[in-house]
Length: 299
Image (cartoon, rainbow, N blue to C red; front, side):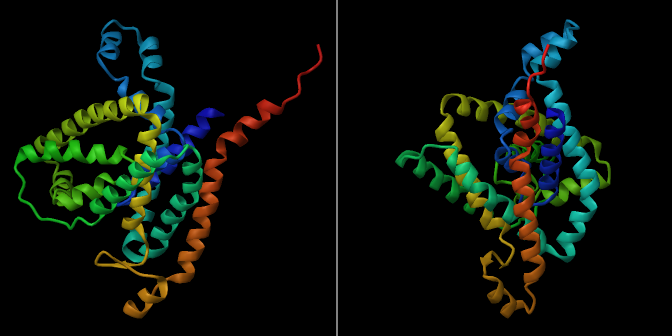
């Protein structure tokens, strides 16, 4: 049953990764699998390579937490391929209800996240720093570039780091840095050379940055969590449904400026987001409760 939990959480992460401005790392953090994910990725190291070269495949699978990664990434890929079309349509035609859904997901999870820490002045300050950082990233404006080939490597490394950092979207960072269109063009035109550089950057960035985050969580666990919670809170600035040119509005203010605020669909989407997050947060309890409460049978 645990495998099903991991796949469901992977589905949620994949849905978030499709939306520019929302990070799959945010959902991993909210759903309590973030630290395990970082540890599993960080275990792809020289020891894993040594086990592979010696043909010790079972030991390698256990070393990299292979079952967890397989279930999680199966859910992510399934979600991306099944929901990409729907989410792309909503982004183009009904973005406000979609942003309302993800805003509600994060707001519903925040009390759960905040209760996971014992707060003090230092952790509150770190949380505030995380909020400021995420808001500043969200205020970046798109650029246009004619990139050199080496920039695809850097773009891959930076984008993948953003993707696993809660509250920041890798696709959004590509968009803001001016690399989104060149990468998309390279994909559509199958420019294998620059795509190889981009993928190499992604691999090196993922393996390197995951180790940094994993080390921070191991040595400064609560402080790191406070900073990450702040980044998640700050991400709400980027995904607030009613905004024009980076200016946030209340629904009726937005309607006065644009003539349409999609208020009813947004409220319905927000209600769905609350229910979905409540279900996701209770997955583990529901899946494990039958085993915990099963009465022992008589011999």
